[in-house]
Length: 391
Image (cartoon, rainbow, N blue to C red; front, side):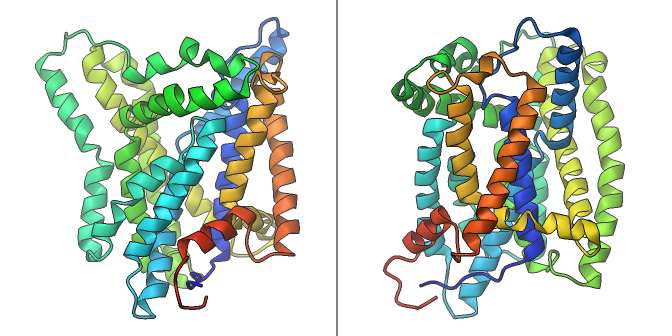
């Protein structure tokens, strides 16, 4: 029931790459249970710091952005598949997002940093813009990427640069407020994550410009689908080569400004909105560097064969994302093994790499026997419940 959008192998592999990078970041963060292990040898503490900095430089703020870009692309592919059959996918897609929200709430019970619920809500904004012309969609995406709310905050701050501002509101929901993660009660973790944790993550996402950037990336993903930028061909390769050059030239000054901003701007009131804007643009530029490199490297050679190993993971991204939350929370939280107390970033990176490899192997094994992952199949069937057309 319901037509399947055509599969693009490079997109599956790229989504798998995002899943792996998210797995690595979540592990070194102890799945948002931040804790510095005391008494480590100086060499290991120094190595932990390097691992942390490098991992977040490479993937922090970029992995979720890749997911958002591909989320918009998938919306276009699914909509186009239905349009070719003379059907409007938008109503069905709204229902699909409601189901995704349900998956996200279940995932949030184990990991309050869940992104599925946020994607599901913001994804509703795609429905009224789905039929805009390319130029209008690009203009709207550009406006959102510029972080319009932060510009308003900046203008107000420039009027009162000496104003004293407190910590971001989201901070009160982390630290001591999520101490339930270290306790031995799974029920308390579920209750805390769905209340304290969920509210904290929503506020954090707003404060860091994620809401506007996610919607912008959804729209850019739609445009990429319309233009066939992930399809093999000379046109798409030219686009990604140019994107790699331009994104690199943009990232270098943006990242430099981001690092130097605390020295350049003394006013906290002014520096905070500037920091949000520059960080979001810097992450966006580097995300494009990663995507362009991935697509270009996927075109042939030994490395392409290695990258293709990620495709099954990408095809089962919902199952993989959900299961890593369950496994990760058991490994690090107090109700499970409680390894947050003894594992620094280096050890956690190794744990994450092993888990990612196991997920890749499991997904490849599963897809040799089934057309979809278990949660993907459930999502697909629930999406098309009541539909008369056969898939």
